[in-house]
Image (cartoon, rainbow, N blue to C red; front, side):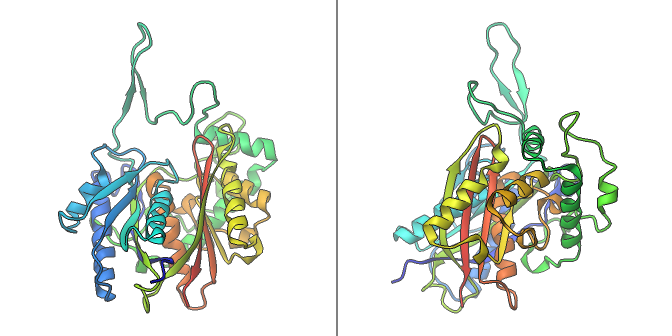
Length: 375
């Protein structure tokens, strides 16, 4: 039997603005309906394999292995295990990558994989005191040890834009494009409604570059990243089924051609997708010019533009239906959301043959996956 991995039944929640539509929903509340929908879609397609495992990415959850809890809540059965993966903003993509590796190796035949984040209900972290100092309350764990730079991502985006000469006007123009494209797109086929919410909450149809230009810098006094050309803090979940091409014969699918991760300078984490993408293309023998769609997490316009410049990616091929600047960035889910977005666009009529998803990760890491439409 061929062990070529494919992704099918791609689904996601609407992306909620933290503190709003999904304010009271936990990671389990968000992930379980999506897993249930993916599983039902797999069954309806005629694939009768048992689910071997559920693999979910998550950054800021409550602990207790949310993937296992969500699998139980989804009604998959007590015999279906679950494991939770943390590679920060790349967690959802890494979860799918791990499932792909297990299918390719022959260890498993069917896994449900993706990511989930509830920024609204994520617990605060307290780091222990040093000497007589009081404990310090943080929203995130360190991305790097004390001897390395560990900037917050917004500060790092400003530093990246400054270093590479990516100006405010260009960032605002890219952000306006993201909102306009997302507002013009119909995502209903990929969305599992939750709590009466059926649409992404952050998208603004009238967000022009002129309006964006009025916003003040958000992270450093002389910076160029603002609330308008950066992503929002968000809640959401996404999942796909990972199985073999032979088992999924006749089912709409995208074939996984390869995956890669790479490390880079922790001071400039936004540039880290570039070496991951370059490594992936070297491994698979493809070139940037072969790619029909490149979905990069739009954490900051500066990050996407820096990666595009570094690799020579045509900006028109990046997030052609908008991205996280318009839709939001539920950290642990975002990598899986990219794959859902790729599958939706590639499997549409006349969709492109090749697509790539990539994420920048705090601490200086990048992750990328290359997929191909199954004829």
